[in-house]
Image 1 (cartoon, one colour):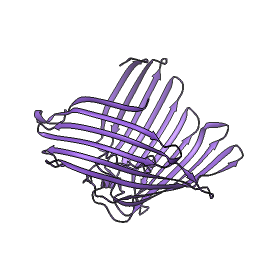
Image 2 (cartoon, helix red, strand yellow):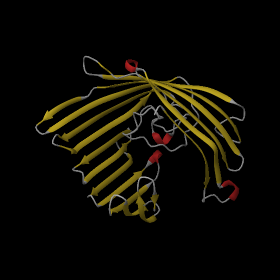
Image 3 (tube, rainbow, N blue to C red):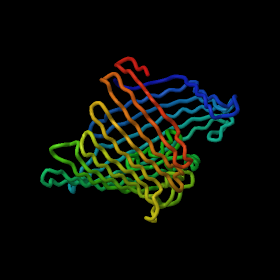
Image 4 (tube, rainbow, N blue to C red):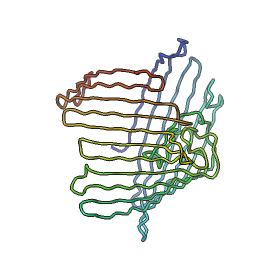
Amino acid sequence: KDYTFSTGVNMYESLQTNKSSDRYSYALPYYRFSRTFDLDKFGWIDFTSNGDNNLVKTNNLSTAISNGIAYHTNEYISDFGFKNNMGFYFTNLNTIAKNNNLYKSSPQAELLNIFEFNSSLPLQKIDGNYLNIIEPKISIRFNPDDMKNYSSLKRVINTDNVFDIGRLGLGADSYEQGKSLTLGARYKREDIGDINKYFELKLATVMREDDQEFIPSSSTINTKNSNIFGSIEYNYSEKLNLNYNFTLDNDFATFNYNSLGLTYGTEKLSHKIKFIEENGVIGTTNLIGNELEYNFDDKNFISFKTRRNRTINLTEYYDIIYQYKNDCLTAG
């Protein structure tokens, strides 16, 4: 109840590698540990410790152990209604490697840190049977240290992760370099009598003091003015949902990312359609997927999935899946 711990060993085989000796990757072993300390009115502290010993491409060996402490303040609401909180993140990273581009061959010990201040102003108004919510939000971040070169790594930023401290998904290796200001706003209109019926719009963008060449360029937050990230969701009922995610270039003329999804479902049958398009630095993807699922009961279901890659005019797969699942067994 007080902490979580996991460990294990993994082996992966890549079937797309021609050289047979380079097909295999090993984690021998890995571990994950985390624990939270409640400081009552002073906030809370998260302690994490992670370790990996990885062997890839026959002779590429790397060992990394990171210990992290994150201090979070409780939310403070000012007299004007602003909701504020701060976070302080520190990580001790210890590495050694052989034939590895990311880590050096001699033992290295680094101290990484980043600080953030978040503020939002939640406003609401009741209009007949509807509750209207408007919430502008800002996040100020500062990292005095450098980061490793992840410029070629593919990372997609959207309204769901743009305010996360780990929005680049780099784990314990690096914190986002430099100073940045994240601006966003959320508008939601929901039916008071039916919480499953609502309309929601989110917008966000990132500004920073200087361009950062080591931040993944596909995220677009490496430049002084990032793309504009947005999402629209309309939930008509428990059965029907329509969502649209987009990334608009800061010149307001080009959409670098579009994602449109439609979900319709009943207790027995559900149908999902999704379209994804990427352009510019984000990628060149153009996909349309379709998923149909039928539940016989709580333990048995069958589904059919397919996805077409419109960029190369190819249907990537047809999947038919039957699965049985209970509290201790899953078979398919």
